[in-house]
Image (cartoon, rainbow, N blue to C red):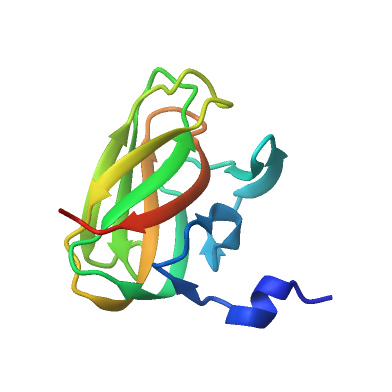
Length: 146
């Protein structure tokens, strides 16, 4: 049975004006990343150094978008989250360092100002850490940069 969300927007289609883009809606991800239920819905686990999540065809992205994402990091080691255009080797649009959030069940929001043009773009989150599990990923959204 096809999910109603997929019936409405199509596979691998996103809109920057949506209130939230859920992590589990990814189009492509590294091996080992799994969706698990949590108190707020779902989270992605199994994110390691070099892992990626890809969300192609995000329409209505404003130029120099402000991206907000929710993650949990239970490690002493920080995780650097890079946002690339289209794929893991695409143009680097922005990066953010995420320290310990108080545990793998303590999700916090982080912001990164992207250097992108307006229009339709794919985004790829790439994770770098020295810890075994980098962090857990919940969702992201856009706000207009000021």
